[in-house]
Length: 216
Ligand SMILES: [Zn+2]
Image (cartoon, rainbow, N blue to C red):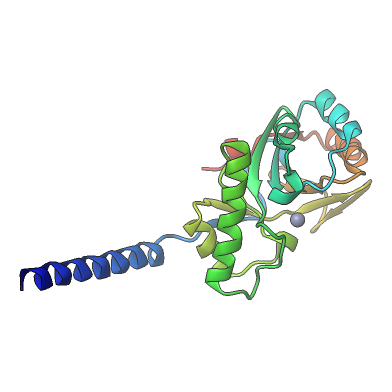
C-alpha cells in the first residue's frame, strides 16, 4: 500500500513538473523583432551572415576600418574556424542563423524551435558564448519564430533595412540613415562591399556602432 502511495506521489510530481514547464514556455514573451534601431546618433549597424567564405582581403579592409560587427552564422560553415570569425572586426558579436539555413516561416513551433535552439547551441559550443541574437534565413519568419527564439534564450530577432551585394547597395526606401541595420554576407565580394560602404557612410556622415550597445 505504501509503495502505491509513493508511486502515485511520484506520478503526480511528474505531471506537475510537465504542467509547470509547459506553462513557463507558453507565458514566456516572444523575442523582439527589429528592422532598425531608433536612435538620433549618427550610427549604423553592420551585420554579416552565413560564413561561407573567409576572404583575406576583407580581413585586411576591416582591420583598417576597425568597425564593430555582428555576425549571424551557420555552424557547419564556421567549421573549425571560430577563431577567424572572432578576430574579424574590432569586435564581432556572434548571433545564430539556424543549423540548416532553412526558411522557417510556416513551419510548426516545434520544428522552428529545433532549428533555432540547435543553431544557437552549436555556436555556443564553438565560440563559448553568443550575443543571444537571431536572424531567420532569407528574412522569412512568423509569430512561431519569435516564440521559438525566446524559448531558445534569444532576446532579439534582427532583420535589416539595407543590403549590400558586391558594390550594389539596396535600401528599403531612401538613403542609408541613422539606426539602419545593414546586411552583407561572408562571400568573395565582402571586401568590395566594405569599401563601397566606407565611401557611402563617409558621404552621409554615419559611423558603424556596436549593435549590442544600442539594444536594451
Ligand atoms: Zn543566411
